[in-house]
Picture (cartoon, chains in turn red, green):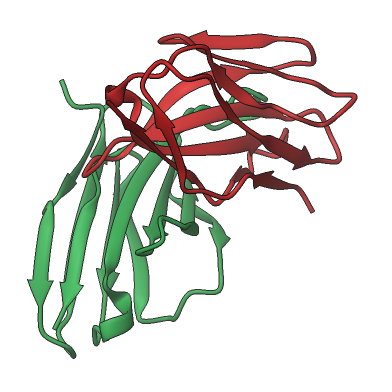
Amino acid sequence: GDSVTQMEGPVTLSEEAFLTINCTYTATGYPSLFWYVQYPGEGLQLLLKATKADDKGSNKGFEATYRKETTSFHLEKGSVQVSDSAVYFCALSDPGNQFYFGTGTSLTVIP
Amino acid sequence: DTAVSQTPKYLVTQMGNDKSIKCEQNLGHDTMYWYKQDSKKFLKIMFSYNNKELIINETVPNRFSPKSPDKAHLNLHINSLELGDSAVYFCASSLGGSGVEETQYFGPGTRLLVL
């Protein structure tokens, strides 16, 4: 079945460091891919998404490119801030409307 | 305007009690979900309702029962609460239908603590 695998955390970075959180997926069809962010004490919020191969989703300085050849959707940000500290979830939605989340990656950014 | 709302935000109760968590969405979506998030932040889908019909029922105990009076509401009732039920429960909704793009919108969560 479909699934999402993301790098385990926790990840700790200094402010202004470069961030990469890896995400790979397994799907039989052509899924949509998502990154969600969960700030402390809050629900999940959509960060960015991509609906087809080679699409790039971007928001708040974060980017991820839908790579069909490597079945990946890695999240990147060039310069993280303390306010980016959160848990990040990679997810996919298949054409059958099933939704699959990764296990989450906790990010802490220190000043 | 809150898109997906849940009540209560916090729920502290004794083992053996029965409790309900309410969820409402004002997005006009056809599909709603309940997730359980454990202390390690792992999200597990529990139920999904599409236009008031159950379409996913993962292997959760039958003490948990979703109830959907209409497509804007999906409540979660839990009987005979156990210590292991302590978690954060999230409601979510999505447009539904046959489209590929299925962004889910989450509520703020209900933090359940069973003593």
